[in-house]
Length: 340
Image (cartoon, rainbow, N blue to C red; front, side):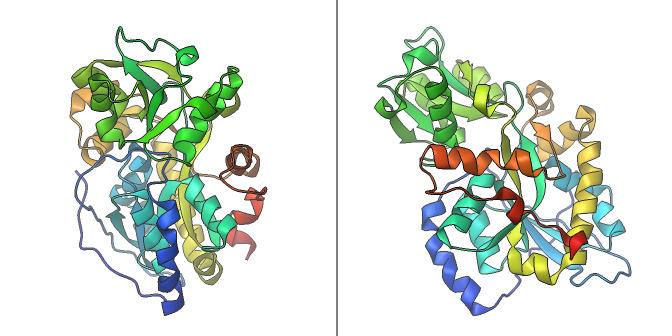
């Protein structure tokens, strides 16, 4: 079971808190699932170290993607590095990003889109600290009613499609799929529906189709009879990088040893996460699912080390579909504390 501690709030200079209000444009931006549940936090004691900051707060979206984070905590990898880590669960992409901008979290886990949006719009200077997940086969799919009018991608033109948020990776990746198949994605009516509510909305006929990630793909089939009609992470978005850990540039520049320690601990935990038997007990707790469902879900590809060419795919896709106006160099946003 996960260990739970008390949450902490780190103060940051007032100028950082002031810009948090500009994050309304980032509301609900996430490439990973919102899995519900109350805020969870955990802490582990660190030993002697020369870290600039030994106690840090890491906030995350409630998703399967953070299994390595909890593994690093439970197995003592953070403690081994001299880190005392408090883990907090944020309710949404906006909430997680606000924690970073406002100084209430030192490092946050989110989809990559909010980081590049904040960087492009000047909301914050962001650095990407560690990778988290990339899409794996059948982990990010379009679903429709079984025996309904939608049987494939070719049926999507002019229809209502549920996405967790508009003008984010959620609808952008579907646009990419439709474009690849020669379809007019501009004819679609995008409807914002949370991942937990999407399967029910599809089953009722409120929307013709919807995007889902695990564990909602599995639970949606079990509870509402919806079924996948297309894997959206295919073709140009095959193995697409979905989420990672970010921090303010100021934090990474002022705390290079702390950042390097976090990266080393996450690298060890991510290596452990390649073993499904290690991951399933963690996601039962973090995703609030039972053992049987955990055994059925398709897991994303867990990463930790950052590859600039792979990461560059995110802002390039954002430019292609108008989320940002000009290209961003992903390499320049990668935190490299060992080079400091």
